[in-house]
Length: 480
Image (cartoon, rainbow, N blue to C red; front, side, top):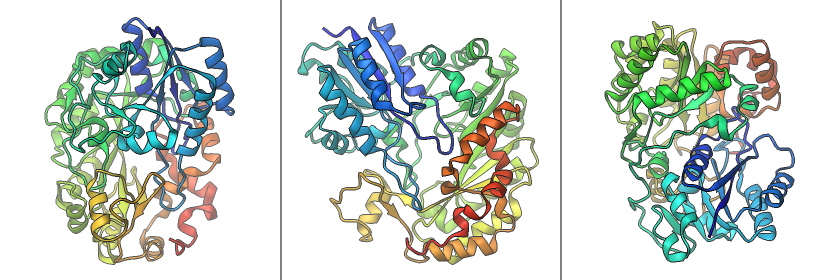
């Protein structure tokens, strides 16, 4: 019978910033509450992760091992990098040095569990959320019992893409992040901690994997429980800035309002960021409520400011809504990072220029734009179906390693030339590849030491001056 479980968070990616492994902490807490002896090993800052894993195997002697995988690759068309070979080094080491029952999980695994199991030579993975499933898996005495864990995927198993038992509606376990993770190390790079109010996304965006990771049904936490978690983190860590990492913060209608009203009632004296919100349905009343609750920065994800591209990406809103959201946020105190995808289906010179006009003329002086070039193709997405239909990839092509879509109506180099010539202030624009510079971590550390107000993306103009000629926009993309 398994009594000791080691959870390993494998993410070591620092671009654009190190992210505390909240998901792994949720799993560790669920196992602890179920009576297991649990150790969480966070490899984020380890220079020799394999040595650290060996030490944990020898000192803790786990009977079960859960391996958390946040991302499969960096999603960067201009500088692609897969994290899977490094993951295989870790899993091979574990297999050579332990007889423990091994389970894969995390958002990266949920995207393509079968292919990753095959590549790593492992037998079991959990797709979707894992708090209840992981407890059932490690509590089981045999393969039949393990198979009852919702979302369990076995190597070689064939399942329906629309399988629904990956996503539960549990009373979500309070994550207790500071119990499992040395949050001080993350706070050195930006004094912000993640908070999640809900899971799930009902959107149908062409490229998105959230439906695979969190499901199409919203599971919302009690706003009072979220406020209590924030209060506890303030008391135990001393930080007063938090980021809501919900898939789309302002959906479904009504939940954001209930959550923010509860936060106001608690009088937490905290500041909040939002990692992702939609222009769809945004109102002046909502923006004012966000200001009252202490939200100072948001990431907003229109992906384009052109109806043609928005429709092809299946965003579910129009350019008129994008413009209205810009007007509302522009006159507020909230800083906004506007996120765009270039090279999607139907993208051409006209659609690129239309988005550039929006960036030039409608984004407030206090705001920034973040541009991703090309779209990563993942299985079970509309992007995959379209790429097959257009002959970009073959139907059964292995896309475990970074594989991208780019419109055949405009080349990457033509896009670069238009952006370089047409954007009025290129210093206000962040490209995904720009976030890979090694000096960025040092700048984040200095910013924290100087107690600069976050978010640190708001200082992009200074960063871009420092890296200057090394920026990706300054070098030809003709090889793509």
